[in-house]
Image (cartoon, rainbow, N blue to C red):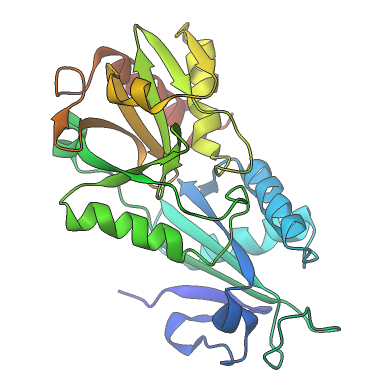
Length: 287
């Protein structure tokens, strides 16, 4: 298998040859942002929306965007073309650059721009058929979770709680309300209605989150975007997790207790069908 090709500061090169100085502020401070874009049949999914979210993150940390949308599209397209898989997971990583260790922003320092592509992996069929387990934890992250920052240590620690418990995800609760998962957005189904927590500073605005709500509207599935109390989460008929990498999965066990009937529910089956149809006709098609 040929070595993965990455992009670093204007150059395309093999992953094993890519390196950055130890004084890069991403390494020293976690001073940077990232974006993850799924690629289906060599077409980046919702590129405009991902680049808009990237701009939101850059604005949030007061870092100028190194490229405009057309230049991003060209460089992303070339990276996709230089790698083998038809379906890829594209990772963008931008830091404030290399400078001596000082908390204040350095002046006149170019940002570090890194991109890499990995093969897209699908959820195992058994987890789609049976659902996955999750645990809950208090959301103890900072107050700007809408910024896709590379300093993900709180998410890493919260996600590891799930791994330690043999679960797939940690569902985060803040002040008695649902925020999101450690690495996903979370949806609740109650009495035939799909519930989604509202966007804000306390959760990442997921692109797949948007797609699910659009498909619900188009498919006639009742939904509400509103704050969701912890009691509603624990009494849910269905729970879902969504992300660019995981797409949509049913959570059938929460903190060791069955969610609903303990198996993927009827609304999940309906949404999964809508999502896969959308994936075939739009993500892989010409729409």
